[in-house]
Image 1 (cartoon, rainbow, N blue to C red):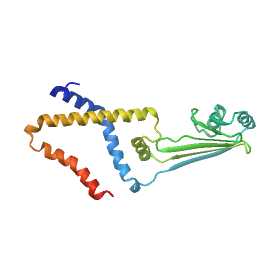
Image 2 (image 1 turned 45 degrees about the vertical axis):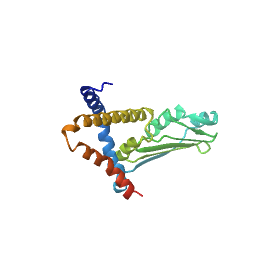
Image 3 (image 1 turned 90 degrees about the horizontal axis):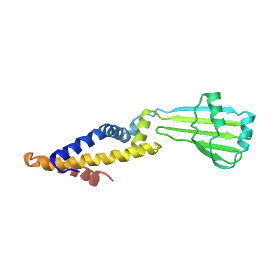
Image 4 (image 1 turned 135 degrees about the vertical axis):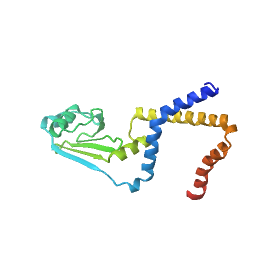
Length: 199
């Protein structure tokens, strides 16, 4: 990395450009997370229950017990009978009589349960709304590996942005008397609040 003024500025604006949308997203969801109790819940619950055809039950009874991938025949049945798209990659627990699988996601939770003795399938999905969706993105909750990698890369870019910003402050501090008092204030205020007001 070049430590010339031009090099520092280049790293600063590149990291700032990479961080721009992420910083806006994380700042806004920081506010919504901080005021989660004040934001009304917007839950939409979808439920469905059906009788399974005998042929599908017979297929289930042939499966080995333990953790299994959801049977493709069950996925197809839910799509045809209830127009419900169950992810084919979902894994669940099969004990020879009952099958249960859950797949939480950002802002939503879904599950499906099969009772082979009663030949029934029950499905439920809870959608907690867009605010909950973006709050879960902020926390990396049930978002998958790619999003977690993005958060890590975004965090590194933020560190580069902050360090190069500090270097630019150091370069220009001689011409701007208020640089270090304002910087010190930005460092001290959070610590004072933590020490005095956070218990």
